[in-house]
Amino acid sequence: MQLTETYYADQFPIEAYECGRLKMNGQFFEHSVIINTGQMPKQWHVQNTQELTRADLQLLLQDQPEVILLGTGAQLIFPAFELIHDISHQGVGIEVMDTGAACRTYNLLLAEGRKVLAGLIL
Image (cartoon, rainbow, N blue to C red; front, side):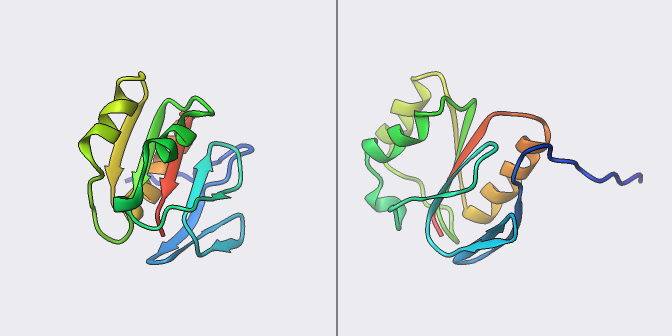
């Protein structure tokens, strides 16, 4: 097996995640965040999947990502079907997963040069 180091030009990969916090660019975040390609995280008021609204998900569409990753916390908890349906009908892929999986997937898509956005509930 050949291993190679991934280089993220002008990007901020997620360096570490543990339940309740993540690390990017040497900085820890202990609140829910929105992470967009090439930007540092922005605080997101959402604390759990049950309180997600259409407005919360529309906020994730503002920067026109190719794909949205929704990290639902330590466990995978699907939001209301109609919320996901609304996003997918706007031509943007949305994937719902636990936050650890969303962090790993974000880094993979970032390394591929994809325009990815993650809404991560911590």
